[in-house]
Length: 249
Ligand SMILES: NC(=O)c1ccc[n+]([C@@H]2O[C@H](COP(=O)([O-])OP(=O)(O)OC[C@H]3O[C@@H](n4cnc5c(N)ncnc54)[C@H](OP(=O)(O)O)[C@@H]3O)[C@@H](O)[C@H]2O)c1
Image (cartoon, rainbow, N blue to C red; front, top):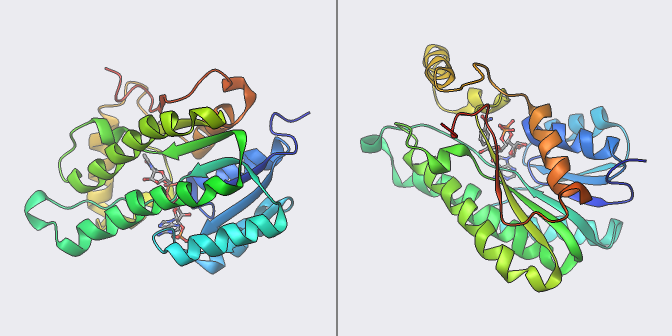
């Protein structure tokens, strides 16, 4: 018997990287999963590769109408939600003096506003006793040159989980943050860096990881299954770092 048998899960940003791998694990553990993403082709490919018990709903988390459409679909198909993994996000680098208003707004619109309303709009469908997992980052608790905007968005996510733990305690909804360290996903190809800059960035980061390697999406997925399942039944409000030790020393 799977650890998520019969559970209904929603994963934003489920067509790539750790969201996709988590969707795979959730289905393997017995859940029915709804995944989202803006890119239709990647979403269709993700649904196909997972193969069963998965629905794709195209949408942008920073657009409130898209979130309404997502949850209308979830209501129609499943009627409720047991697990919400608010995972969609983006990360770009820019030196402090080169950050534009557009760059700033893009990060806060997706990583903060998008995540906020992803959770708020899910609440009417979430069962009492359900589990919410927010994807933050160890960047939210560290100082890394060129990452001030991204890191601030992830610190905001960590803050939401503290407050929502209290806001939702009477409904016995657990709210936990997951903070990945450097994880090998397509995100590194979208950071606005050249291939050489990406390699240099990767090398610099790895020097700070006690385990000396990047993590995998599957290592994240297994941690999310833990936070989603009854294995973590007495855990709420935490920030679980899956980071090879990077932010722990
Ligand atoms: N990889 C790392 O080292 C690392 C470390 C710490 C934290 N994280 C966090 O982990 C999360 C997942 O990232 P990943 O590494 O798995 O990267 P990824 O492979 O690039 O996945 C990002 C996902 O988010 C979706 N997304 C982005 N913007 C969106 C929007 N506006 N609306 C809806 N979906 C959107 C993407 O789909 P579409 O592009 O199709 O919309 C994609 O499915 C992010 O929140 C990221 O900040 C990553």
